[in-house]
Image (cartoon, rainbow, N blue to C red):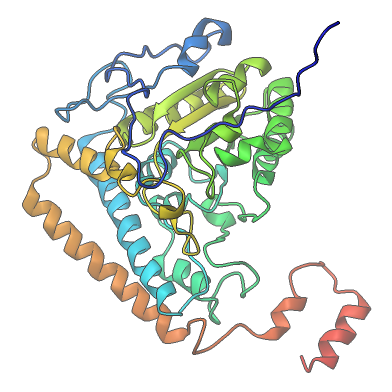
Length: 410
């Protein structure tokens, strides 16, 4: 007679928890310049191995090596460094503002600045991004005014969204930044739909979709890949794998596939992984994917391998679920320090220039903050009019909303 054993499940666990010694010994890092750069029309089956390696340009000496280097001039790299520095300083000021009660909520980008800042420089101004809440670098690298960002965070009377969005959920059609949604995953499908519409209308603009490692477990992620692959939509699909969702390590969402990029194989989509802390590598991969999309070759799935050095948000305490020293032990380093080291190595930057830039950017951010706070913050100053809650939904406001607005005194 056969004995039937009780069924069981396997629950993935991170390598270390609070109090443990951080250990990334199983994290395989290929040498910089080791991954080949295929032609943009390469058959996805011929580059399957790129979903399991990591494209890197900067080596330990700060040198740019390999076939993915050379997409940016030294002047453009200096600007890129300044963009990342601006985002980091902006983050620090806004996190402090949240602690002071000037806004209700904030999400920072600590350790991930290179991804959005570098990717934006490979796009055209009229392309459209469908971001998550951790791609403010797209706005900063695209020239969006810092004061406008702060007005939105403070929900004051000059908030371009009139207080109708959570802080940090920016929106700017003019800057190719689609409205951020708190319903995680939806923007991936929207990016594909927008790209399809662009192609159907004979336009030249492409889309870029953004999603975090945790949200790849949402059905929207898979639906996006189905439509993108079926119709060869002109879109770059970005997965930012920063190792942690809100408090869940990336292995939960990844499942048994090995890498997030490998999920593209089942859809016949060219899929690559890139060092998300390497500004040069991110830009090169973004340029490659953009060229594919513009040439009518369809989507590219990109996994940006990085690490969320800070908390998930101002409401999160990461020490409750991961080792305190884990961020410092992350083997791919800090994106700002790495680009700084490269620019010094090629004679385009110095420690003195870096200090001066730090001071100049800090002053600019403080000036923008003072301007925004002079208008109002969450707790004081001029707020959006309650009338705004009735606006912007219908082209012609229906009678029942007109009555409600009048009853409210507006």
